[in-house]
Image 1: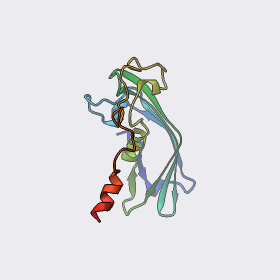
Image 2: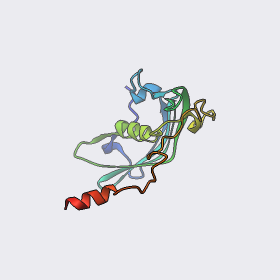
Image 3: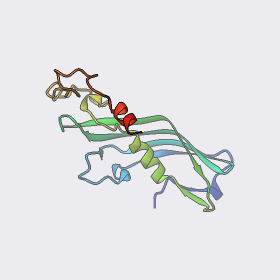
Image 4: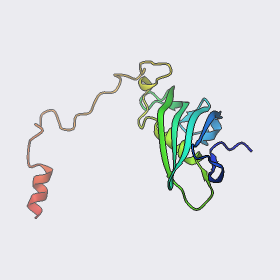
Length: 159
């Protein structure tokens, strides 16, 4: 079975090991109903070495995802490119370390928290919903922002 991220510490050379390859989009384990979908393989070029009680992973990760725009709800593509990837894992008593979850999570965390199609970096475009929604003012137009006692002043009166 192909397990490139399963590192056997007993066979890891002192100078470390380089691993290069790709994993299919299914590597990310995303549900088909998820608004985030991997549309390309995860490409990786990693150097793995032991540093005392830690395993140091450095290198490069790249994958393309299809995201749903939070404004227009259309799908767009976004490339996650971690050119200077770095992870440090504590070595436990187990002679093997599985990097799969760490690499999966680090890649997914690099996706935008609030996806907008104008932020797509594969095929840049303007969001079709741009300007369709007005910003809501926090105070009424006829009421000045400083009218009346502030929230902090009301709390101070309680003390």
